[in-house]
Image 1 (cartoon, rainbow, N blue to C red):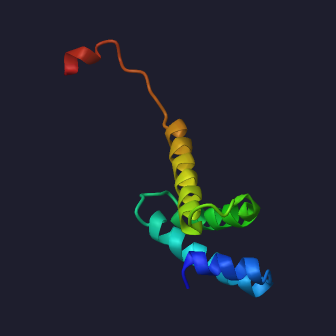
Image 2 (image 1 turned 180 degrees about the horizontal axis):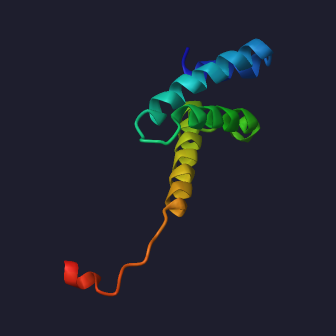
Length: 102
């Protein structure tokens, strides 16, 4: 089942089963994107993305494809993750005579 058809089924029949099918489709779709990046913990990243999509389902306006919206949520989370990793990079001071080694 495609993301768009899973979303349509969820909107027509808001049941636990339709939500489970929708989130399973989101997990498969986002998982394909997550695999393209070298992330520290891809399983946690994927779980967090599915949680974000679930919590923000009401924010989806219905304009455009649902898959495009999920892709954007996924990419935003991945970029946020990279920004957090960048901030954790430790810098160190160089010795005064560093230039003589080069």
